[in-house]
Length: 214
Ligand code: MN3
Picture (cartoon, protein in one colour):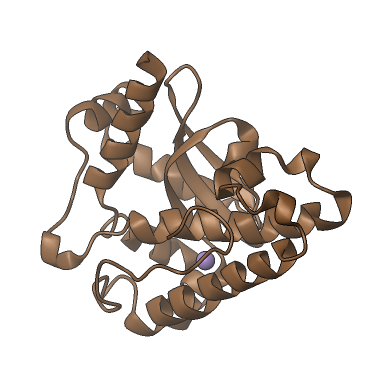
């Protein structure tokens, strides 16, 4: 993905069926090629007539929302948020060919310290995801004191607005699971733990901690 306007969709680093049986191929195709593509196209359309913002990254657009012209602010929040959230969503997934990637090292230590163990952590994440009313996300993030936090956001709002650095997220918009799971959101969330690439999550945590150190 290029880092500024015009934003372009990047191809997945795994096959569309790589998350079977937990996330089905048809959902992956629609989610990536149609839903994410639409957010990218809409964001580019909104920014088209605002060259002043053509050198801004997604992060900059989302962190500086209040400085954007009022008439495009809500659209940028929805579309840039949609692109940012989905980029992270697709990047964090682990192809089954790689085997299950459980937390290790510093990620495991931090999860165990804060939540006792992975199972307990995932229960809290699940409850948070189930509490999202309508569409949104449940996140594992890290705050400015380097503590892990579990939070939820609505719609495509950005977690960056909360001054949190995201490590991973569960998309609980119906488009993420409805074809396979119908109204069984809890089953989708429970299965989701099998497709998280914890190596990727750990790398994000390490990057953040190194950044804070410098
Ligand atoms: Mn989605």
